[in-house]
Image 1: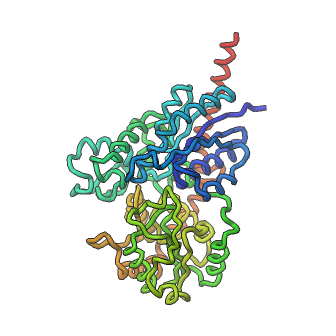
Image 2: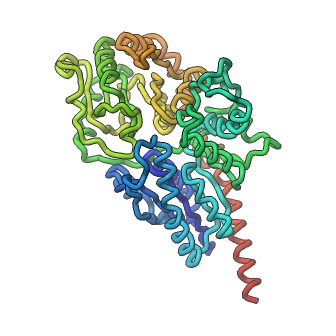
Image 3: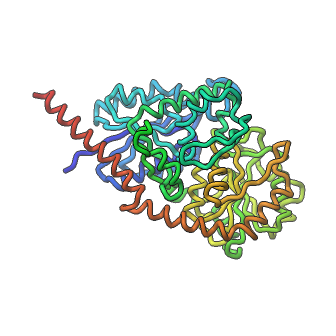
Length: 479
């Protein structure tokens, strides 16, 4: 009987970092039944119900080790989301070390795979003589920026948003400085310093898994994997998206799917800003009036307003979003649209025949889910690397339209209506043809002989070789 290969994975805080690395883990154990994975989970405050429900979908070959949650009150006040996530892992490091030590004494580990926000735990890979990997739940385009940032930092004296010329990274579509990652827009901030420290660590691992595939990002992936460029081995293993069904019994599931069943094919615009994106009160009003003005069908997952675009990312909101919609909006649009509070079954919605477009914050998980269903997008980025994704989708792949923002940082109702009409009436069909090709390529990549599966086999072969070497060393020590 083949010996079990045991690895540990460490997600980053937040659902959109927890579920990608665990879906990746599910894919690993599906392809390699002799693999066992222990997931060591840091959290900020209590684990959200959506995460608890998702964790119930894991197979027996993935076990969970929950760390003592970090108290949000122990963090300095006013930190942006990325810094909160980083410090959550930092405060959890002693507990991570103890779990790894315990695991290694019982069933020796061969590798440690960490989310990019958990990079500090890579020090323990050296301590316990493990192969070290980063699971990067974002695009190859964003990873290219990570590797390019130290040079950009050295060569640039101003803020990146003030650069006059677009930035050209190997194999990537040119990008303006103001469209780079949100966390690096203030170079004097703690967030920027932590970000720069993080990206410098990426060069010193045994490999990086990226949640993408060659047909979607051929230029960046070719450049990242080019021999002699100094990068560690890069494994494109995507698209990794959520598998399995959550919240089957929630009223939202039945209501929105039942409503979609009554709509014409490709007639509905799905509007959602992901698991944590929020709009200001003024922007909610403009979006609502723009949806109404467009005269197109819509399904909107609404959330209560906030002046922080990522305020719902690490903490749940309890306010009823319907209280913040324009007066009379729900009554006036009763036959035109449906508004769902806070959460809806996104994968089921995107796969529905009545969906013709997706107004999205361009989070990478949502982007890949849209690709897998062949749905073109309206790009409305809010935070993190979402502007980068929007540039790639609109300027590179030509599967998204971007809404124009006025001088006050708002997308006005007339612009909302214009871009919706453009996607649903004029541009959508051309984009759907491109999306259809990406959808087929994504499906092929995930087959057992597909490029993403082959990439996974390369890494696991090394793990098994390392397991053999450990066993040989153990036998020598016994002699």
